[in-house]
Image 1 (spheres, one colour):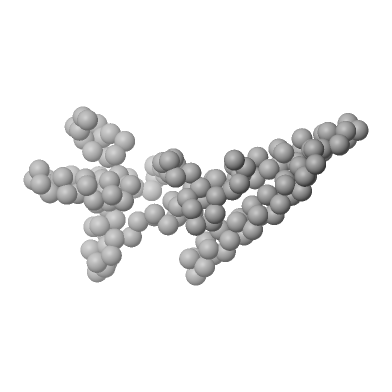
Image 2 (image 1 turned 120 degrees about the vertical axis):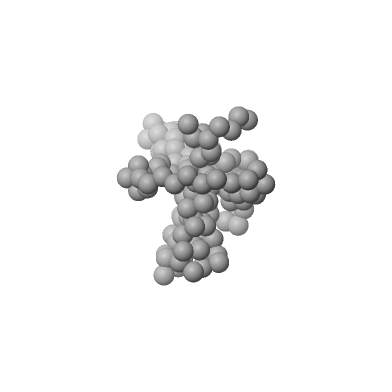
Length: 155
């Protein structure tokens, strides 16, 4: 039975980060859900221990399953390309958008708390509203930049 990597029998402070820094550097990227109808055909390949080790290492380096790596490499060769296309850019964009969604939710929660205090007749702490609005403005700019980058890569 294949394991999570596609191999059989193997045992083994409030400041937002800059747009160039990864949103959560210590977090592994979340993978998109699989589409079971996308790939329904299975191919078995015989490899030497050395060949298998090289392929497993190359797949791990790209953070993809061995099956995905073999499919991408095989398709690249069949199409006459020497470049192996992976979804690393798309995975990075998905991770960035997920991080931006989390950050936007946190800023929205802060603004809701400030509104609650204000509506109850109280006053927010000095500078609290300005800080939340500045964070919101910066975050919206990052979202715009991320969307623009995705559009330019699509063209």
